[in-house]
Image (cartoon, rainbow, N blue to C red; front, side, top):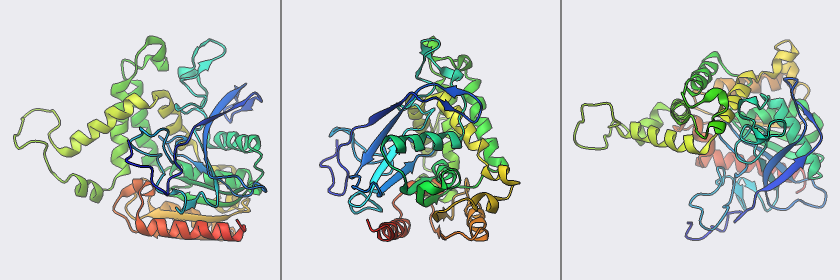
Length: 382
């Protein structure tokens, strides 16, 4: 429980549900006849409805980006360091929306939801989704809230891909796109990491072809291993060295295969925690959405031609030790935007935190992010 909710917090927030009965045709050709999206909002929508910011979450993210769900919460939302009064995304100026994407496991329609055709959880029968499907559903949520155009669409990692896709798919519906620690498409190495993670989940004896809930079980071992592998890619070697070094949990050597180094215990803790709070089918479909993302493939593999459809201004941010989405990948986006004659600001931030740096309140990062968002507010007269 927080000792007291900080003055620069959005405070206690309550998730909301938007229900849609208009069928959504997915890129795969499958159709969701009806679905729900869980979302949270922070700040106040102005009379002109011109101050809305959409936050797009990354792979394991969700709608709870800031504030607390109750006074008993020990931790705030996943991006609380950047969302709130006086913060980079200042809720004194902006009305902020963050939703749990379709296929998620935190309230929006996904694999754990009841399939109306069977009256049982969808499980692996839930259709695969693409980033463009998320953007389409987000646009429908904007319609539901009466928002015609976002001041900005903001996201890190997989969220950055959504922010980029917004600029391509709905160029007239956003003024700014903020793409942080992201890439125009996955490298072969990243696709390989995702495939190994999916393989260990699907090979878990408790997976039951994705219908584990029907069997009242969970593929915890597989999901735990997948998360441990992914976690390695989110941290840099320097960050792991600084955090754990070669420190051991005991002065005695066990001479067995139980975790003895602090880094081993940390990975087991994170993996075990994740395996009880995240859905395995959601993990599978979200990693596949990452793999499939490649908007330039529909424009003769010309990223500049693809981004030429954008009408908004861009902020692109990378981090020096992010080897999952290294600065060179962000610079591909920047080079394409320059070639397409688009307005773009680029920052490469020195950090030892690896890919996770976009979630951490690194002073220089927060300062430049704040400065840019202040410019957004000023240019839009908010």
